[in-house]
Length: 253
Picture 1: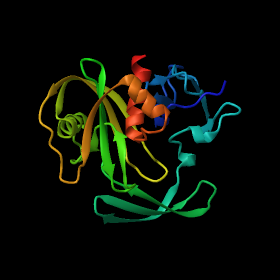
Picture 2 (picture 1 turned 60 degrees about the vertical axis):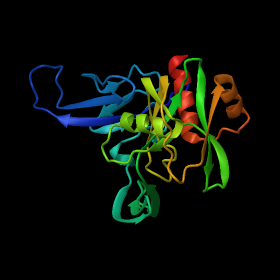
Picture 3 (picture 1 turned 45 degrees about the vertical axis):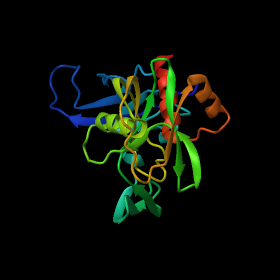
Picture 4 (picture 1 turned 180 degrees about the vertical axis):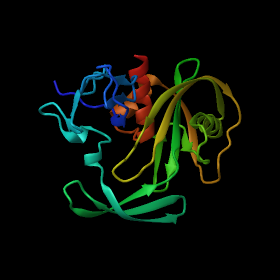
């Protein structure tokens, strides 16, 4: 069965050689974001994470099991693109970065991507197990879309939870007593560096909706089965919302 790496990095550090055979000049660490760090005195490392693959390090060279693609590794020096020059410009709330890069095979390429603030998305669950969903007008696609409450983290370094609480109240008119962190995801890493943090919220209390002038939002309470139907028939297309629903189901099932 093929295994896929959840996301890990290989780091090496040098320590003095001691008489103890359990100490190495180079210690290689396998980190899985979902599990603890594992250090082995041997040169082969296998995480307890079922989605990772063992990695063998010999004389500073990384060896993967037969049939495993190097693309599965997130950060290995030999796979990193080298940036020869970089240009940045700002358009409204978006940053556009254009890098001149050297690929691992030595080929030169121009690669552009969008940079903008990190964001949050919330799955709000009422006491009677309904979901607070939005129907929101999106000018970029000239359409009203089913979505979950979401928003941009305005201040660099601000805790995502603070923004999630603010966005939930502003867009739905509810506050939440219980919060479950569902991790984060990258919606489109081929074209943007955006990262979105996901949450589930319960223990809802009615407050006051505080919409911005450009926000055209209808609030709907629907059952999980109704939401499931919207997802199945393709009416619910909100990427962050889909990620939040999937993470919640996987974590709580």
